[in-house]
Image (cartoon, rainbow, N blue to C red; front, side, top):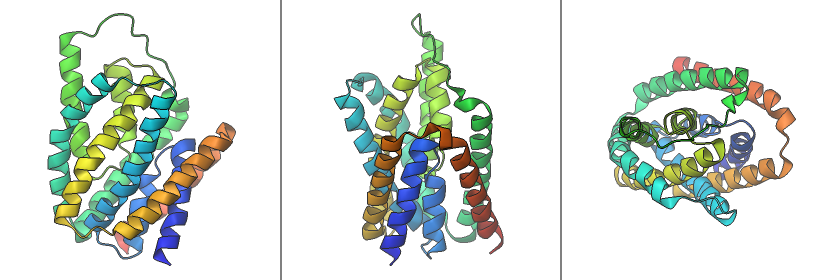
Length: 250
Protein backbone atom coordinates (compact mmCIF):
# COMPACT_ATOMS: atom_id res chain seq x y z
CA UNK A 1 0.00 0.00 0.00
CA UNK A 2 2.79 2.43 0.90
CA UNK A 3 4.55 1.69 -2.38
CA UNK A 4 1.36 2.51 -4.29
CA UNK A 5 0.92 5.75 -2.35
CA UNK A 6 4.49 6.75 -3.09
CA UNK A 7 4.02 5.95 -6.77
CA UNK A 8 1.03 8.31 -6.83
CA UNK A 9 2.93 10.99 -4.88
CA UNK A 10 5.83 10.55 -7.30
CA UNK A 11 3.46 10.86 -10.25
CA UNK A 12 2.23 14.20 -8.95
CA UNK A 13 5.75 15.35 -8.00
CA UNK A 14 7.19 14.42 -11.40
CA UNK A 15 4.39 16.27 -13.17
CA UNK A 16 4.91 19.33 -10.97
CA UNK A 17 8.67 19.22 -11.57
CA UNK A 18 8.08 19.65 -15.29
CA UNK A 19 5.21 22.12 -15.05
CA UNK A 20 6.35 24.33 -12.17
CA UNK A 21 9.26 22.80 -10.22
CA UNK A 22 9.57 21.77 -6.57
CA UNK A 23 8.33 18.17 -6.63
CA UNK A 24 10.73 17.10 -3.86
CA UNK A 25 8.90 19.45 -1.53
CA UNK A 26 6.08 16.91 -1.71
CA UNK A 27 7.93 13.61 -1.70
CA UNK A 28 10.07 13.96 1.45
CA UNK A 29 7.25 15.29 3.69
CA UNK A 30 4.93 12.61 2.29
CA UNK A 31 7.35 9.85 3.35
CA UNK A 32 7.69 11.42 6.79
CA UNK A 33 3.89 11.46 7.11
CA UNK A 34 3.99 7.73 6.33
CA UNK A 35 6.19 7.17 9.37
CA UNK A 36 9.70 7.18 7.89
CA UNK A 37 12.38 8.83 10.03
CA UNK A 38 13.60 12.08 8.50
CA UNK A 39 17.05 10.88 7.37
CA UNK A 40 15.55 7.70 5.88
CA UNK A 41 13.01 9.71 3.88
CA UNK A 42 15.76 12.12 2.87
CA UNK A 43 17.96 9.26 1.64
CA UNK A 44 15.17 7.28 -0.01
CA UNK A 45 14.17 10.36 -1.99
CA UNK A 46 17.63 10.35 -3.63
CA UNK A 47 16.71 7.22 -5.62
CA UNK A 48 13.98 9.11 -7.45
CA UNK A 49 16.17 12.21 -7.83
CA UNK A 50 18.98 10.16 -9.35
CA UNK A 51 16.68 8.34 -11.77
CA UNK A 52 14.88 11.47 -12.91
CA UNK A 53 18.05 13.46 -13.58
CA UNK A 54 19.82 10.52 -15.25
CA UNK A 55 16.96 10.29 -17.73
CA UNK A 56 17.16 14.05 -18.25
CA UNK A 57 20.92 13.89 -18.95
CA UNK A 58 20.37 11.19 -21.57
CA UNK A 59 17.52 13.19 -23.09
CA UNK A 60 19.65 16.33 -23.42
CA UNK A 61 22.49 14.28 -24.92
CA UNK A 62 20.23 12.66 -27.52
CA UNK A 63 18.95 16.08 -28.54
CA UNK A 64 22.50 17.32 -29.06
CA UNK A 65 22.85 19.35 -25.87
CA UNK A 66 25.95 18.31 -23.94
CA UNK A 67 29.09 19.95 -22.59
CA UNK A 68 30.45 17.25 -20.33
CA UNK A 69 33.75 19.06 -19.73
CA UNK A 70 32.04 22.08 -18.18
CA UNK A 71 29.42 19.93 -16.43
CA UNK A 72 32.17 17.84 -14.86
CA UNK A 73 33.98 20.95 -13.59
CA UNK A 74 30.80 22.12 -11.88
CA UNK A 75 30.16 18.66 -10.45
CA UNK A 76 33.69 18.25 -9.07
CA UNK A 77 33.30 21.54 -7.22
CA UNK A 78 29.97 20.45 -5.78
CA UNK A 79 31.03 16.99 -4.56
CA UNK A 80 33.11 18.04 -1.50
CA UNK A 81 30.11 20.03 -0.30
CA UNK A 82 27.82 17.09 -1.05
CA UNK A 83 29.86 14.75 1.14
CA UNK A 84 29.73 17.16 4.08
CA UNK A 85 26.06 17.95 3.55
CA UNK A 86 25.03 14.29 3.32
CA UNK A 87 26.93 13.44 6.51
CA UNK A 88 25.08 16.23 8.32
CA UNK A 89 21.79 15.11 6.78
CA UNK A 90 22.18 11.57 8.12
CA UNK A 91 22.68 12.87 11.66
CA UNK A 92 19.78 15.32 11.86
CA UNK A 93 16.76 13.35 13.01
CA UNK A 94 13.50 13.62 14.90
CA UNK A 95 12.01 16.97 15.82
CA UNK A 96 15.07 18.90 14.67
CA UNK A 97 14.85 17.40 11.20
CA UNK A 98 11.16 18.24 10.95
CA UNK A 99 11.76 21.82 12.08
CA UNK A 100 14.69 22.25 9.71
CA UNK A 101 12.64 20.81 6.86
CA UNK A 102 9.73 23.12 7.68
CA UNK A 103 12.01 26.19 7.64
CA UNK A 104 13.56 25.13 4.32
CA UNK A 105 10.12 24.53 2.85
CA UNK A 106 9.00 28.00 3.94
CA UNK A 107 12.00 29.54 2.18
CA UNK A 108 11.45 27.38 -0.91
CA UNK A 109 7.76 28.29 -0.83
CA UNK A 110 8.66 31.99 -0.83
CA UNK A 111 11.08 31.44 -3.70
CA UNK A 112 8.49 29.62 -5.80
CA UNK A 113 6.07 32.50 -5.22
CA UNK A 114 8.71 35.08 -6.16
CA UNK A 115 9.69 33.02 -9.18
CA UNK A 116 6.09 32.90 -10.34
CA UNK A 117 5.65 36.64 -9.84
CA UNK A 118 8.70 37.29 -11.98
CA UNK A 119 7.42 34.97 -14.74
CA UNK A 120 10.14 32.42 -14.04
CA UNK A 121 12.91 34.93 -14.72
CA UNK A 122 13.13 33.60 -18.27
CA UNK A 123 15.84 35.95 -19.43
CA UNK A 124 18.45 34.46 -21.73
CA UNK A 125 21.94 35.45 -20.67
CA UNK A 126 24.02 37.31 -23.23
CA UNK A 127 27.40 35.66 -22.86
CA UNK A 128 29.34 37.63 -25.45
CA UNK A 129 32.76 37.60 -23.81
CA UNK A 130 34.75 35.13 -21.69
CA UNK A 131 34.12 35.19 -17.96
CA UNK A 132 36.77 36.78 -15.79
CA UNK A 133 38.87 34.54 -13.54
CA UNK A 134 37.35 36.25 -10.50
CA UNK A 135 33.82 35.51 -11.70
CA UNK A 136 34.68 31.89 -12.46
CA UNK A 137 36.34 31.42 -9.05
CA UNK A 138 33.29 32.89 -7.32
CA UNK A 139 30.96 30.63 -9.29
CA UNK A 140 32.93 27.47 -8.59
CA UNK A 141 33.18 28.36 -4.90
CA UNK A 142 29.42 28.83 -4.75
CA UNK A 143 29.05 25.36 -6.32
CA UNK A 144 30.59 23.92 -3.14
CA UNK A 145 27.70 25.47 -1.21
CA UNK A 146 25.22 24.10 -3.75
CA UNK A 147 26.74 20.67 -3.23
CA UNK A 148 26.39 20.97 0.55
CA UNK A 149 22.74 21.93 0.31
CA UNK A 150 22.02 19.21 -2.24
CA UNK A 151 23.71 16.60 -0.10
CA UNK A 152 21.97 17.82 3.03
CA UNK A 153 18.33 18.06 1.94
CA UNK A 154 18.02 18.54 -1.87
CA UNK A 155 14.58 20.19 -1.63
CA UNK A 156 14.36 23.24 -3.87
CA UNK A 157 18.00 23.06 -4.96
CA UNK A 158 17.05 24.06 -8.52
CA UNK A 159 15.77 27.37 -7.17
CA UNK A 160 19.32 28.35 -6.21
CA UNK A 161 21.36 26.35 -8.73
CA UNK A 162 19.61 27.72 -11.82
CA UNK A 163 20.08 31.42 -10.92
CA UNK A 164 23.74 30.70 -10.14
CA UNK A 165 24.37 29.18 -13.57
CA UNK A 166 22.30 31.84 -15.31
CA UNK A 167 23.57 34.96 -13.53
CA UNK A 168 27.11 34.11 -12.42
CA UNK A 169 28.19 31.86 -15.29
CA UNK A 170 25.99 33.80 -17.75
CA UNK A 171 24.50 30.69 -19.35
CA UNK A 172 21.30 30.69 -21.36
CA UNK A 173 18.44 28.68 -19.90
CA UNK A 174 18.96 25.68 -22.17
CA UNK A 175 22.54 25.27 -20.97
CA UNK A 176 21.43 26.03 -17.41
CA UNK A 177 19.09 23.03 -17.45
CA UNK A 178 21.62 20.89 -19.30
CA UNK A 179 24.29 21.45 -16.64
CA UNK A 180 21.79 21.39 -13.77
CA UNK A 181 20.58 17.86 -14.43
CA UNK A 182 24.17 16.59 -14.89
CA UNK A 183 25.34 18.13 -11.62
CA UNK A 184 22.33 16.90 -9.63
CA UNK A 185 22.61 13.43 -11.17
CA UNK A 186 26.30 13.24 -10.31
CA UNK A 187 26.17 14.43 -6.73
CA UNK A 188 23.02 12.36 -6.10
CA UNK A 189 25.14 9.22 -6.63
CA UNK A 190 27.53 10.40 -3.92
CA UNK A 191 24.72 11.46 -1.56
CA UNK A 192 22.86 8.18 -2.06
CA UNK A 193 25.98 6.18 -1.24
CA UNK A 194 26.51 8.11 2.00
CA UNK A 195 22.87 7.81 3.06
CA UNK A 196 22.91 4.08 2.23
CA UNK A 197 25.99 3.71 4.43
CA UNK A 198 24.58 5.67 7.36
CA UNK A 199 20.80 4.99 7.36
CA UNK A 200 18.37 2.23 6.43
CA UNK A 201 17.19 3.43 3.01
CA UNK A 202 13.88 1.94 1.87
CA UNK A 203 14.93 0.77 -1.59
CA UNK A 204 11.57 -0.67 -2.60
CA UNK A 205 9.79 2.55 -1.66
CA UNK A 206 12.46 4.55 -3.47
CA UNK A 207 11.98 2.55 -6.66
CA UNK A 208 8.19 3.03 -6.48
CA UNK A 209 8.74 6.75 -6.01
CA UNK A 210 11.19 6.85 -8.90
CA UNK A 211 8.71 5.07 -11.17
CA UNK A 212 6.06 7.61 -10.23
CA UNK A 213 8.28 10.65 -10.81
CA UNK A 214 9.43 9.23 -14.14
CA UNK A 215 5.86 8.67 -15.31
CA UNK A 216 4.74 12.06 -14.02
CA UNK A 217 7.64 13.81 -15.71
CA UNK A 218 6.89 12.08 -18.99
CA UNK A 219 3.21 13.02 -18.71
CA UNK A 220 4.00 16.64 -17.95
CA UNK A 221 6.51 16.90 -20.79
CA UNK A 222 4.12 15.23 -23.21
CA UNK A 223 1.18 17.48 -22.37
CA UNK A 224 3.25 20.69 -22.13
CA UNK A 225 0.31 22.58 -20.69
CA UNK A 226 2.17 25.74 -19.77
CA UNK A 227 -1.09 27.66 -19.28
CA UNK A 228 -1.89 25.48 -16.29
CA UNK A 229 1.31 26.38 -14.46
CA UNK A 230 -0.17 29.17 -12.34
CA UNK A 231 -2.92 26.88 -11.07
CA UNK A 232 -0.44 24.09 -10.35
CA UNK A 233 1.90 26.46 -8.52
CA UNK A 234 -0.97 27.72 -6.36
CA UNK A 235 -2.00 24.15 -5.52
CA UNK A 236 1.60 23.27 -4.67
CA UNK A 237 1.86 26.25 -2.34
CA UNK A 238 -1.34 25.29 -0.51
CA UNK A 239 -0.11 21.72 -0.03
CA UNK A 240 3.24 22.98 1.24
CA UNK A 241 1.56 25.19 3.84
CA UNK A 242 -0.32 22.14 5.12
CA UNK A 243 2.92 20.14 5.29
CA UNK A 244 4.72 22.92 7.17
CA UNK A 245 1.91 23.15 9.75
CA UNK A 246 1.99 19.37 10.17
CA UNK A 247 5.78 19.28 10.61
CA UNK A 248 5.86 22.09 13.15
CA UNK A 249 2.83 21.40 15.30
CA UNK A 250 1.83 17.71 15.02
